[in-house]
Image (spheres, rainbow, N blue to C red):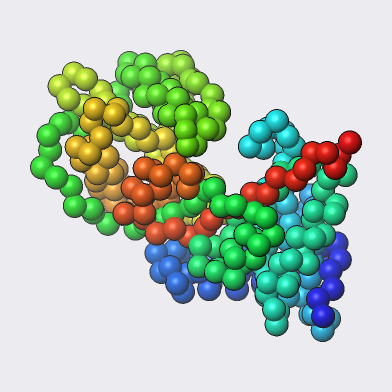
Amino acid sequence: MVLTRTAEFSDLAACTTLALDAYRRERAANPVLPAVQPEDLAEPLTRVLQQGLGWLALEGGAAVGFLAFLPPFDGAFGNCRGVFSPVHASAFGGSDPERTLTALLTEATAALPAQGVTSLAISRYAHEETTLRGLALNGYGIRCCDLMRMTTPIPSPAPRFAVRRMLPGQEAEAARLSNALAAHMESAPVMMPKARVTAQQMAADRESIAYFACDGDRVFALLTLESSGETFVDDLPGTMHIGKTYCEPAFRGSGAMDALMAAALRDLAQQGVARLGVDCETLNPPAYRYWRKHFSPFTYSAVRRLDERLLV
């Protein structure tokens, strides 16, 4: 029988062990992922458990699962208040992992509406088939994916255009392509509002590295690199993350994105960076198809929207 109770900060060691076991199972199925130590998970888990939005599952007196969320925020996939459980903030084991999952989800969905929450998002490892099935049966739909690869070279066609790093004074081109990406994300099938940026904002961003693909003087594609991503894995040493990518429609299928990727991977490998991560909306089919060609999925995030009439 699975029993549940509120997770306390004193449960950190048990939760860290459960989270580490879950990660090591994913790494066994997905060797591109780096090795992690308990301390790599203990720090991000501490931040989550300190929020007081977590539950622990016990079977025979032993901890077999847990589920915790970051603080509620507004504008969660709509005009609603939502919460997110990052991939390190849950694990579901015991004699019946699906029952453990359901018991913890029940606790969360009973408690969170009192804080105005009607959107729950949970990230889990890509090879946890039982968990992903259990989420679907509990009303959750997948919409996001995190992927990773080594910085080994990829085949790239003979150059038909130039690929170069963005230079000072070219921030307007980067902003133009970034805003075209925002417009794409707002169209079907993604339908996800995105903020626009200015050249001044691009110039002020000292953390990102931007690459352009150019046809003569025309800049038509963009790829940016960032030092952190959506998961604790992206923040480990020796890892970089792809931020924004966009190619104008007239140049799609030309090999431009492969050329940008090849240049970024070459530079990262020369700098001693071992891995490159990326995240995308699974409901953005062109992006999801492209990234799966070169990267290995290691998480999927699923979302459930509760009926707002419960809050009335």
